[in-house]
Image (cartoon, rainbow, N blue to C red):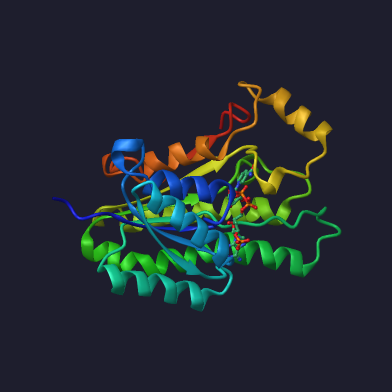
Length: 252
Ligand code: NAP
């Protein structure tokens, strides 16, 4: 029997990352991918709750409480997974924050926090994971960007820059590591119902909804389904791509 694939999912405590972790960890027979999923975020409590939920459904998970903006801690967490399991097959860089402001008012702190959490962390994680993936001659890297990184968004110059950076990073990694059986793709969600979008004014939500071909906000599960595909064994011929899962908002 083939070895269980080991997946490392950041930002798994809630929202999109939680749905990705659940989808990857659920047994194949119950609509999941049957991976062992390492659940990563800063808050250990919600990760332990999710681990228990996954295990009660017949899946397998473990927890690493890490601030992904702390590059050394993130690299150490990945190295510990490789030494514990002897491999790392799937890396999903999903952890992200917003610190919205108009560019004229944006502070250095707002800029740096978003770049460090959303972009630098992905570079650090990829660098740490790539050695094990190269040795295995297999790897699936998925970076969660945003349609803001593709078409821009007023008030989000830091966030859009970080997300556009993820797209450039992913294309370069895809080119560097493709010959070693490693793919690297981007999933770019549009507007998804999570804590991140919970406080948007109703008027803004209505405007966005009206611009979407399917006229509804996405769910975390919509994004998880796309991640499940790009991280699957069968997606080996798909790399360097940005897939906008946005209900037809941008059609980019
Ligand atoms: P969310 O509900 O706010 O969840 C964010 C996740 O990231 C949480 O698990 C949080 O965990 C984790 N996180 C944040 N900072 C972290 C840090 N420094 N270290 C470790 N973990 C950290 O957001 P979401 O809507 O699910 O978004 C997930 C991803 O999708 C993000 O990259 C976001 O930019 C992207 N996205 C979301 C939407 C949307 O409409 N929701 C649209 C486009 C793209 P802790 O707080 O427990 O650390």
